[in-house]
Image (cartoon, rainbow, N blue to C red; front, side, top):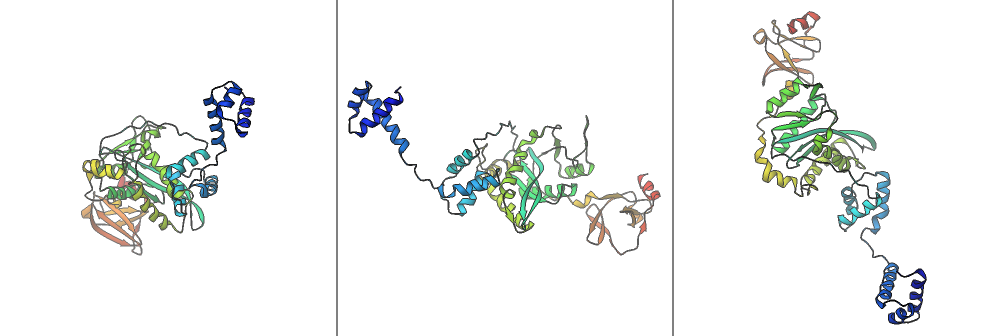
Amino acid sequence: MLKPEQLRIIREMKAEGNTNVAIALALNCHPNTVAKQLKEKEEKEMPMKASKLDPYREYLKERLEEYPKLTAVVLNEEIVQQGYTGKLSILREYVKGLRNGEKKPDVVRYETEPGEYFQVDFGQGRTTIAGECVVIRFFCMILSYSRMIYVCPVPDERLATLLECHNKAFEYFGGYPRKGLYDNMRTVVTLLKREKEYNRKFMDFANFYGFEVRTHKPHRPQTKGKVERVVPFYRNNCLYGKEYSHLGHLEEATALWLESANRRLHSELKEIPLHLFEGEEKDHITRLERLYPIRRLETRKVTEEGKVTFQNMLYEVGSSYKGQSVCLVKEGQTLTVYLEDERIAAYPKTVDVQKAQLADYQEVLK
């Protein structure tokens, strides 16, 4: 290896017009060594080739300073709108450099058969709506085999919301797999012990469709890792660093994003989820015939006197229905009573009803 003083002599002699052979004889080294040193010097001094990304570097730095978790895909969409015509791979390398090469931990995932499993979870994130930073909750479902996803913003995580979102997801897919995988949310599991106790109303919903309910062990959320990945995927692409004029605007953006998300090349499968669903999984899911009526959540047993209790009031439905379970739905200012899918009574809010007493509840319990 040449010493720093020898490298200096090579540059000086070359500047004076000496040939590589003459320089090599003077330093007692091979002419190829001289040529290599001179080439390395030229490459270092050569100006860097202009990149299509150059005009956007400051913008990207500012965006990542404000929102450090923005993905390269989201940033690419933003600068494309500003005129960027370069490749996503160039942007990925630049973003990776800005993040100092952070490495994500490896996660082991288990594959399932077509139409075997779907996974469900709730998530939340912050975004700006009408100029105000707000927390948005959202529902996620993924088909484990094809990775087709469904996401929608929700007002809360109550049971009625959970079931309504299932209905929407099943409509979106046109059906549902044989098993559903959940965490131990209270709307699914009411008691955690050796033998879990499941929410009776949720199990009525699952039995209506005929799918099997599975839950992971406590403190093992990685069991449903596929849907766990959907949560930050949606949050980073539709909420983080975004602005919407109203909630309906976010819902519209979510629907458009779903179209592109299900048509993307999946990073692990190296397949497009929609193509995998249409080609291999669709024929293995249970076809959706009818939707679960959410009104079945509010069920009451008709007393011997033909009455039901709702919000501390007794409503007359007729002695012919005594002993049967009916469904109650508050629709605006009207309480409607159903026997399965048949509407049997409706009461405007102004109708005179009897206030329920403790004895009435005791009689119902008998």
